[in-house]
Length: 162
Image (cartoon, rainbow, N blue to C red; front, side, top):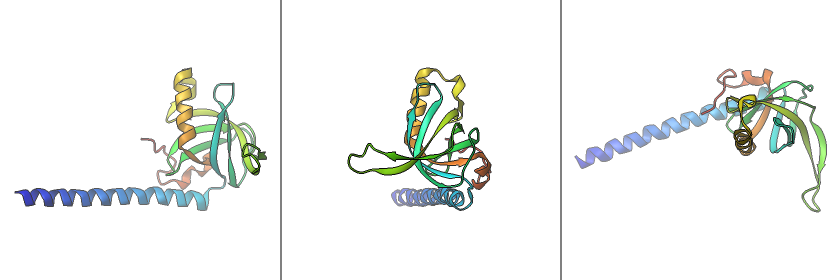
């Protein structure tokens, strides 16, 4: 009886590991597809909220492409899952980052207006929920693509929130 329990546990763990590996493969494929096919790709490092609710400044590195102000963008986590949608309020501009003491580096930044965060419309959020959502977004965001690049994702652009 004890051996059967051990065998059952071992088989269950093997299935679980295979499931995790399969799931990892899917997100890796999404991230690779984004890097290969997205017309606009931006690595997001930092998010600073502005005084006006829903407006924030995103800093990072422009990998390729450009979008006009007013263009819809999607903010993704490191696994290619959509965590927010927004409108660009300006094109990415290169700015010198002076906050690193003697080290000065150039980074891109642009302003955006949040439309939704984790599937909830920003217009429906109170100030407390918006603040928490924005902090969560700042910690999770990794990639930004244009709305037309959603077809790069395996879900065909459907939100992959959990």
